[in-house]
Length: 81
Image 1 (cartoon, rainbow, N blue to C red):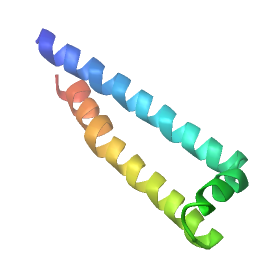
Image 2 (image 1 turned 90 degrees about the vertical axis):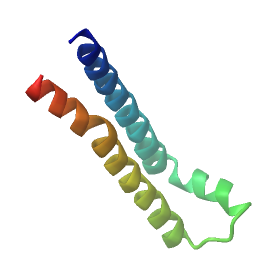
Image 3 (image 1 turned 90 degrees about the horizontal axis):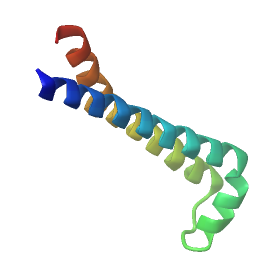
């Protein structure tokens, strides 16, 4: 039972850490979106709309990944064990 408690704690902390990364990414994109676009425009020729769509899509995939890989297993272990 001790191993399950440790794994549940790991999943909880990992979920919190990954959601913090997601919040920082969103804040950087929201507050410094123009600077990020100029930085990436040096390497890639993307229209601004495509750049925005790629970032929002990446955030969505990251969020779903955190939800499925960390939050759902943590919730299952919390409810059933």
